[in-house]
Length: 153
Image (cartoon, rainbow, N blue to C red; front, side, top):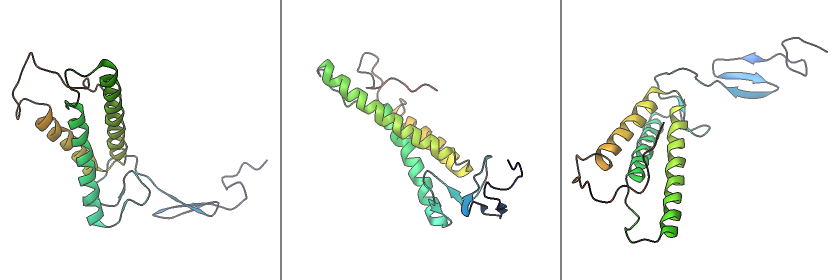
């Protein structure tokens, strides 16, 4: 058995600044520390690419997703007189949607791009300010609570 540092078929791997060749396939290098720059890969391979405009669009998408998570978290879709089973099903569907979107935001942040991290945090802050805090709505201590319990980390 050959224990050299070459690939299994005996071909040496070649490194470049954009990736490495292994077994004839290009492998991209991923950042494992925070970095600044518009050359990031967020959520999908090749997105947003090297176009600065697409990077800005991706930042808006991450911001919107974070705001959407907060909106769903502080929504009141279920009527007070709704039956327990119907309310339970709707509450479960809302929870699944909220968690799916929250995981998408988390995966975007795992691109280790500082811009993505900042817009995700700002999106959650703005979403909470608008939908969760008392800044824009009347406080009714005896009133209906949000449909979903608060997210815990």
